[in-house]
Every structure is written in structure tokens, then in C-alpha cells.
Length: 387
Ligand code: UDP
Image 1 (cartoon, rainbow, N blue to C red):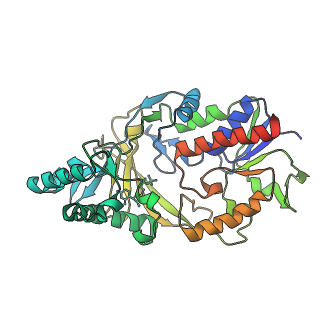
Image 2: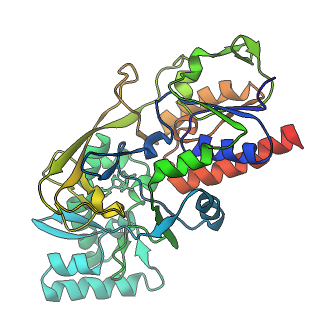
Image 3: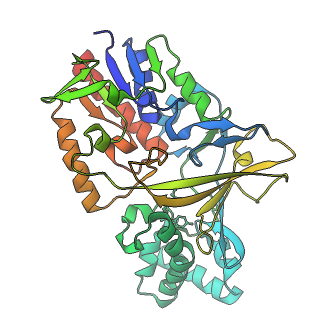
């Protein structure tokens, strides 16, 4: 066999695994459907020199030293703590909701009462889930929770997911807590950095290695065939490991039906002004049809003076038959996971086939979590095949 490993997809799952195998002297073939590497982390530099995240904003943050140590090998990173404001009652207040948000939206006396109650009720915590607040037995806390729920979560979540908030997995809502203090960062992780020259450069460095053959604009599903629980690459049985990071339902021709996702319409606009908004991301939980506006200049080290480019995100349903529609968000619920497990069962019958990544594992992965998973999978697969 010409290759020791075949990897489908060049997002963080595929690129991490490709690099690890390549560094350990394995010949790796990476098949990428798009005409570029990096999956949804890919950027484009526009004529005005602003580097935009073509598939929506990606902010790196992690508590995992191993993951960041790995990434540091592929480019320079600069310290960047993400801060988000939300338009609530015509004011731009910190999101996640913190003590400053309370002070901006309540009368001073009421604000003091809420802050004191929160500190008393949750003395050892830096943050608390909105779901805990609305279920509190304390009247002040419960009412405050309901206020945040109504103004920050309810409409944003309805726009983003198009199902009632009660049907959303708690882990999704808990991504955005209420902060018990003045910390106004969006993430509380200890490591928060962004790539100086962008994610695309990181990917390109990861995948540039004498042991890696990268084929862009190549749909692996036209080259792979699954028959009697065996997998064939260009009609020949492939018995070395194959790592698949594409959509698992597509791999099995949607035979049990399509896995549901949410998609987005991304609307980029270039404005003739130096800056459009006071921070990189402003959330619009309420009246607007979009959920948030990202201004990319804030992520770029090369600031362009005279104009700026922003992105509005409009959530929409995903339709796998529409080739312009991208599956951005998995919709975690029992029914969808059960459907996923049926596909996983098919995948597990093929002993040398491994699923890795958001689409293959049907998981709302952050970037660091998918790299961590890929590093672990590398150990597991190399142990089985190459030790
Ligand atoms: N969310 C919300 N209001 C906000 C921000 C987030 O209701 O202002 C909820 C919403 O349901 C969203 C989830 O929290 O889908 C997770 O938000 P996050 O910012 O982590 O989403 P991502 O950046 O992955 O799109």
C-alpha cells in the first residue's frame, strides 16, 4: 500500500492527525473536498487587507497545555482575550452577564441587592449557570435569572436553534454563564491566544511535511467504497487506518435519514469607517434577525486604517441536498444522538475506520477539544497499527 494512513478532511481533526503520523514516519494521504485547507477555520484576506474568517468567527481558548504546546509549533500566537458586548435594552453590556452588566441595567439600589445576594448564595463560585439562577428559591435571584434569561438567552436561542429553549441540551446554554464579579472575558480559560498570521497559516504549516500528500478539491466519497464491512480506496482494499472527519451520515449515504444541523447565512459588509463597533463581537439577542456582528479588524495584527469589514450571522435550517448549505452546528438531543449511534454502529463494523471531528462524531466541539481528541486518537491508532 502506497499510504500508511488515509485522512479525510483537513480541519483540526484531520490536520492534527496527519501531522502526528507524518512526524512518526508514516506516509499520509489527506483528501480535502474544498479547495482550501483548515475546514471552517479558513480565512480570506480581502482587498482592504482585512483577514476575515470565511465560515464565522473562531476564537482559540483552552485549559489544555498539551493542545497549545502542539499548536505553537506551527506559527506565532498573540495573547488575545475575547470580550463580547450584547445589545440589551438599547445598551451595550458585557456578555456573559457580569456585575457591570447588572449595574448598567438596574437602578443602583437594586443592582447592589442582586450582587450581594449572588455573592452570598454562591460564595465559592466565579460563575453560575443561568439555569441555576432561574431555579433558585430566592426571589431576588430567581427574578434576576428570569431577567437575564429573557433578555440574553430566550430570543437568541430561538433564532439560533429554532426550537424552544427547553429542548436545547443544557451544555449548550451553559457555554455562556453569569459571571459573579467583574471579569468581562467571554471565556475563563487560562490559555487565550490567536494565531498572528491567521489560522490558515497554521494549517498550511501543519500540513506541509514530506510525509504528507494533500489533495484539495477531492471528494473522498468518490474514491472510497464500503462493501461487506471492508473499505476500498480506488477499488483496492485498504487495510491500514482510515480517519474520517466528514459527515458520518453522508459516508453511509444517509441510509437512516439525515442528521439535523443548524446552518448560517453569513453576510460580510465592508464599511467606510475606521471601526464599526467597540469590540470584536456584539451579540444581538433580541430584535434583529442576526445573532451577532463580528468585526475582524480586532483579530488582525495588521490594522488597516480607512475601512473595516463586519460579518452578520443569520441562522437557518440545514439541508444536506443544498450544496451551498454548510452544517455548522450539531443539534444535541436524544433523538439526534440515537440516529448518530446507528451510523456509528455501521462505522464500528469496519475495523480500520475511525471517526474524528464535529461532523464525524456529531459533537459541538470547540477547537481545543477536537485537537485533544485527535491527539488521543493518534496514540490509540498508532499503538494498534504501528508499534
Ligand atoms: N447564547 C444566548 N445569548 C447570547 C450568547 C449565547 O442565548 O448572547 C446561547 C445560545 O443558545 C447559543 C449558546 O448560548 O447557541 C452558546 O453560545 P456560544 O457563544 O458559545 O456559541 P458559538 O460561539 O459556538 O456560536
